[in-house]
Length: 53
Image (cartoon, rainbow, N blue to C red; front, side, top):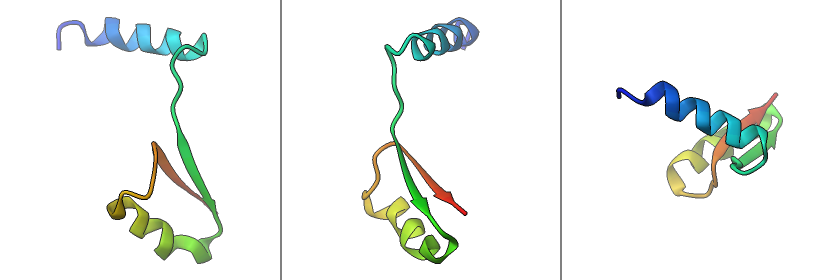
């Protein structure tokens, strides 16, 4: 905890430089809500799961 701010700053810098990347699965449409919600618990996602409405 004492070095949280320092670590967060370093991670942000690495992301800006493209050294650290995050993954996102983006699903579109409210009609896909149930399927997208199930992916939270099935292990069928990699990184962030976003439902774009």
